[in-house]
Length: 343
Image (cartoon, rainbow, N blue to C red):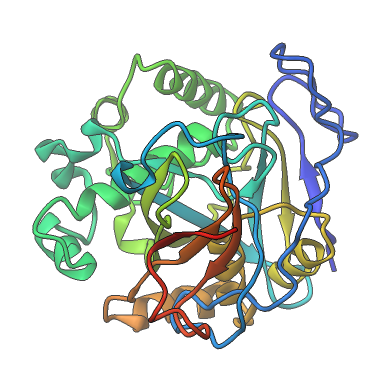
């Protein structure tokens, strides 16, 4: 059985820890303690929670200087890369964001981010296998643009983790980085994309690739509660990690990465040793319930119907710090306002 192991960063091959990013002087050697870890089971991405009110901590300024009701939600996509563990069960790839990040500082996350304008490009559909914008939009229950969430998940996975969920059109094989020259070429593409010099459509045309949107399952839908200065309308997906590609954090936005069993990640989260937001924990619960990557993927595909959006509600003190988060199924959730200031 393999235990959770950190992946090396792009600038430092040492397994002992990440190298300095050259940014602000922050200690990245250890994740910070979580003041109030959530000890209860996180709500399942597929079903409402039946747990009691939970205390949580979220990104907040020291004092409110904005109207929380006027903060728009941004469409976002996240993909959970999974593989079979050595003995049994599955492992998932996670990354720790830098302590200097404006959003989700020092949190453990899956690869993902907001949907960009280029992800909406009408010419992306021909590069997507097994899904159309119409079918994707129907599954997500949006009028149009549903396919852009799959495209964004693939793009973010490549930019943040260096894994490209695509196949060669000629051979129909998932792209392999076993050849050093190919790996170097795609590493350069990754740098260009992160610098805004190349988009995913250009890469597909240049390398004659097709995105494996047919192999990416839709798992859950989370909407950031009213209150934080940044809100996301996020879709969570699942994909099997390609065997001939090794995920690698970028040593910029993310400074550490690891393969970990979902149950182990949850245990460490509850012990206060692995910081993460409730949606991350909830999706780990989904993964922990499955015995293999194939079973987890089949569950996402077989789920078929659109999972309900999870829209937490929060109670905050006068300076805007969230002190209680209510999830669907919690006592008092239905009667509670979306955002409430309490003494």
